[in-house]
Length: 441
Ligand code: PLP
Image 1: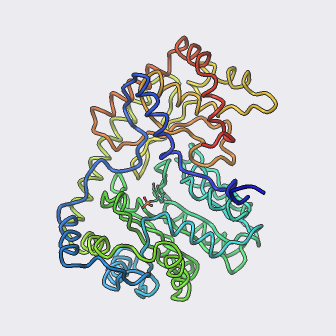
Image 2: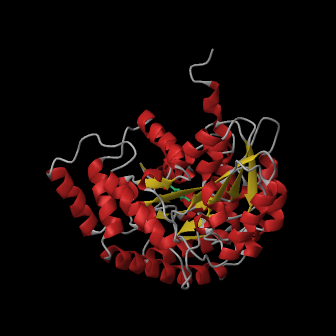
Image 3: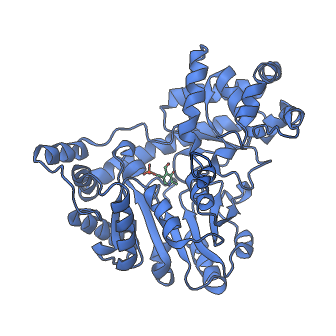
């Protein structure tokens, strides 16, 4: 008998949190680290939002409340969904959650049995794959390609959809690629689903970056398509839009009141309710028009940084980076660097029976961190299935321009440092093994 349940072997994680251990170790070894790994805006929540929470606490609004979410907040959410997507939803279809993550787990737990198939973007937010594997569903990664600016390719999607497809996860704008789905993409996805899926499928549409769009783009939501309304769970969060990552507030809009009751029940079984003073602040964020202005300014700043960083990345020999259309990440292709440093040679040398080295892009990520002082995330952090042989990094734009440019210069230095790489690979070979896909990352 083992102490922990067998299913615990199936639970994944999010490297954005785990890379912190490597950063601390690199710093303890004397390296100053530029942190381009962070998936949260480098802005603070707006004063009007902060005040709303403080006032609510002062007024004693700090007791248990409706597990589904305060009705006044659910009304605001319903109104904002109508305004942005032209869809009328009953506030009873809305469930307020602790950030955007719970609706991912709730959706998988609610709709997916072992053996059912779940389609999800890869590269994509790692928590999708974690839950899919946890419930012993069959993961069907939908590979996003650089040559299509990481919008999904319908020719790739079509064969993934079958009578066994229970859930399809969409994420636009995307973490980590910044790819954005167009209205035409969504219409085509809807047509394919109608043609090929069992009528009981659900779409989980993760739109947490909906307001962070560049070059004047408009957000398109599959919920706006009348034929998809009855199938779609909208997932949203205040974390990125209103720079409220630590507040832990988000929500799901369910296709029916009955399904919302199930999500409410998940809340009851986990954290009972989102703290009411947090919900008052969340409502303030949506209702007060000055926050639209604040969000626009933040997005404009991300766009300026994007332009500088993408140009600088494209000047590094061996690096190629498409311009993200939204979110706040760059996702450069580093295949040329892997070749130049001969990282595959080291990978193959470490690959022996019983020894699973980390992916080549992870090797470069660790080298850049430990020897050149720049923290990024590796390709494997965004879905293991199907990721091997794809050489990318994720660079967050959530630092001021000077910091970003220093980080990019450090990456440029790492990209041509053959001698440094060989020394690192020799001296730190344990690091390149212990972190392998089966090494708990
Ligand atoms: N969905 C995506 C695509 C994300 O990138 C994140 C956070 O990084 C989340 C959901 C979860 O957001 P939250 O921090 O609100 O739980």
